[in-house]
Length: 76
Length: 217
Image (cartoon, rainbow over all chains, first blue to last red; front, side):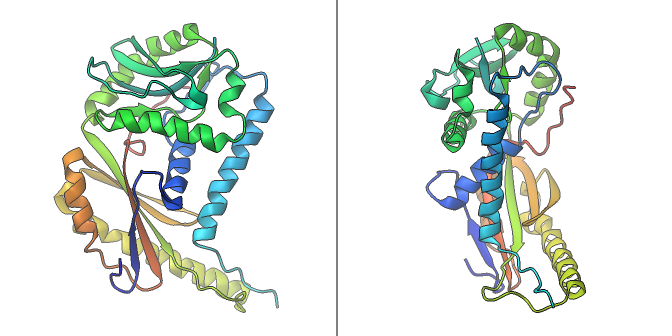
């Protein structure tokens, strides 16, 4: 949708498009109740768990960067 | 047996939720300390977070989504896993009352979000110096904040409260409102004036995760 020459995009939670997928990953992995302390029991494969999550978190950031790629200055 | 937590909701007999969740495990409802908690159990808890994690995340989201259609929820961040029911009960003994308070306050609320970002020009790398680049980045950040400043007046009375958060990819505006205010809010957002070179992405409704605060330490 065009406005003042800028753009407004309305995304749904239907999961039908890449934009909403990024939103879902962002919400599920970065928002919500966090329980700290010893109530959260470590899993046997904790290193693997966090390695897997790191991959996903990186993917979200990469996806968002892809949507708005930065333009670093060239070295002179 | 390990327990994966999805969310907390008000204890109500009419809740509708999917019977299967992450990795096809059954989703159970537990009532304790005046709240309903939705969980899955699996002796092999690593399965919940085994790659591809994206599939697990989407299955997790589907459980939240179906519940959130009809009631307010407090979602847990994925993955929140307890070693068994004893730990879960201990947690609810200590946090149940707080969950009840939050649900009472936010049960009718939803969260809408607008992410405003600069649309980068495609092409080769910029020839600007480092100083010029940093100055341009600051100017862009100021412009993003300026754009977001106008949102509350456009959204009008639909918004109960709002927050702004700066992110690497732009500025995100969070608005809390009643469920029945979503359509008027979306209609109002269609009238937004976004300057050239910028994009606003509206999403929601989401659970009000940006507005509730818990200290479980």
